[in-house]
Length: 110
Image (cartoon, rainbow, N blue to C red; front, top):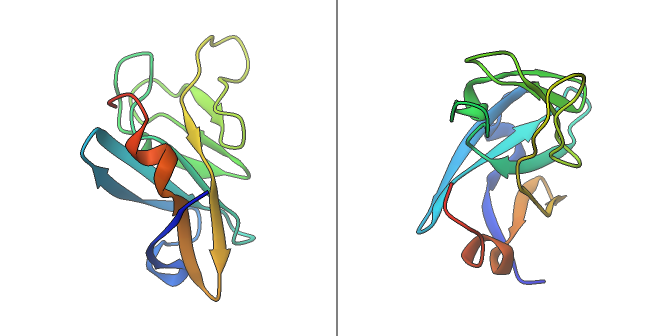
């Protein structure tokens, strides 16, 4: 993998997100209360809602439009909802958030 530094972990609020714009669309980067990071397409497959504006609880995020809930580690919808969003490898190194640059440039547009 080829990692790209997208910023400091402290730039992402706990239980919040920041958006990384790429040539092929936007990726939402989430931070949990226990400082895990997850990266997902910033678009709900149901109605296209911006997941970066959703509510983070544990390792899940709820779409702000219709409350679909996604497991951020797998991208799969939870409960009765059926759907999935693309996930991207993310890690923290020395307080910095890194994303896999190779996967960001080869993904489908969000």
